[in-house]
Length: 220
Length: 220
DNA sequence: ATCATAAATAACTAATTGGTTATTTCAAGA
DNA sequence: TCTTGAAATAACCAATTAGTTATTTATGAT
Image (tube, rainbow over the protein chains, first blue to last red):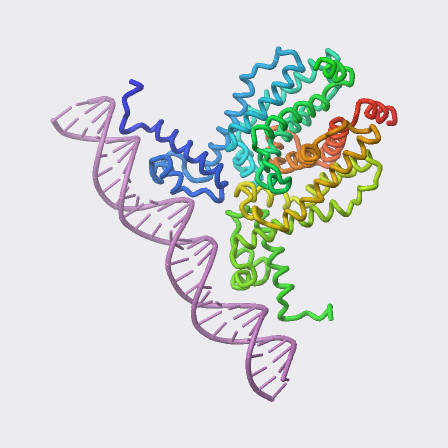
C-alpha cells in the first residue's frame, strides 16, 4: 500500500539521505559538506548513512552520478532526433539554459567534482554509458543540418556541445562575482531572457551557414 | 641591500603567506584549505598568518582580490584600445585562453568565491575600481568595430565579455569531467590549439557582420 | 651598548569532524 | 506468538581544525 507510512523503509531512507546529501554537497562542496548536517537533513542519522553508503566520498560519487543521469535523461526526453535541425538547435540551447537555471545544484556539484580532478567518476561505467549517446545526438543533429545545407559542414560535435553548455553554465555559475564585476543584476527576469536570446543567436551564428543566417533574419 | 637575506622581513613573510594561501585555496577551495598547510607551505607559522591577515576568510578575500587584480592588469597591458578592431578581438580571445590556461588557480579561486555567493568581495571597493574600465574597454572596442562596419551595431559589451570568457573558462574548469564525458584528452597540445581556433572563430561569428566574415574567409 | 618594539616560534585549547560501538526497536517468517 | 535479522538510534572516540597564549629573538633608534 503506497499511502501507508512505514516506520521502517530502507529504500525511502536511502532516498532521503541521497536527497539531503545532494543539497548539502551542492551548497558547500565535498570539502565543506558535513555528514552530521546530511544525516539531520535526511531526518535519519549518521549510522544509517555509513550503513547504506560506506563513507562520505562514496555518497558523493553516487550523488554526482545521479545528477549527470538526471541531466542526460532530461535531454534525451527532448527527442530532437527527428526535429527540424534549426528548431532542434534552438530547443537544445534553451534546454541547457533552463536546466542549469532550474537545477543550480548540478552546476556546483560538477564544479566540486572538477576541483577534485574528477576522481570520483573516473572509473565509473555508469558515466561512460550516459555520455556515449549524448555526444552522438549532437553529432547526428549537426550532420542532418549540414546535409540540408543549413549548417557548416564538418563541425566538431564536442566543441559545439561544450560551447552550448559554456554560454549558459558560465553565466550562471559565476553569477555572484558577475553581479559585482558587471554592476548589474544578472538574475533579473529581463536579464535572464536577454541572455537566453543572446546565447541562441550566438549558437546559430556559430553553426549556421551565412545563407541560412540571412534567411533567418529575413524571417523575423 | 636587496641581496642581503634578512632574518626578519615582514613584507617578505606576508608575501610568502599570500602565495602559499593562493596555492592552497586554489587547490582545495576555501572550505577544504587548511591554515596549517598554508603556514607550513609559506615556511612561516599560523601565528604570523593570524597576525598579518586576521583570519582565514580575510586572507581568502585578499587572495581573491589579488587574483582579479593580476588578471585585469594583464588584460590592460595588452593595450588594445588603438589596435585594429578585428585584430584586437582575436588578441582578446587568445589572451583569455592563455591566461586561464597558464593561471589555473584563477579559475578555482573564482569558482570557490561563487560557491560562497561572492560574499568576500561583495563590498570590496578595490573590485569595483578594477571592473569599471574592464567593461569599458570592451564597449569601446565594439563601438569602434561597429563604426567601421565590421561588427554588428549595438552589441551588449557585457554579454560579449561573458561569452569570450565562457568559451575558454568552461572548457578548462570542467576539463576533468569533460575528459570522461567526451572520452578524449581535452588537454593535449593539439586539443588546446583546436579549442583556441574554435573559440576565435565563434567570437568572430558572434560579433562580425556577414560581409566582414565573408571578407575574412576570402583572406585565408 | 642597551632598550623598546615588532617578528617569529612552539605549545596549547576548545570546538568540530568523520567514523564507530553498543544498544534498542520493529517486522516478517516459522 | 516467538524468534531472528535488519533498521534505527544515541552516545562515544580519536583525529583534526581554526584560532590563542606565552615566550623567545632579532633589529633599529638612542
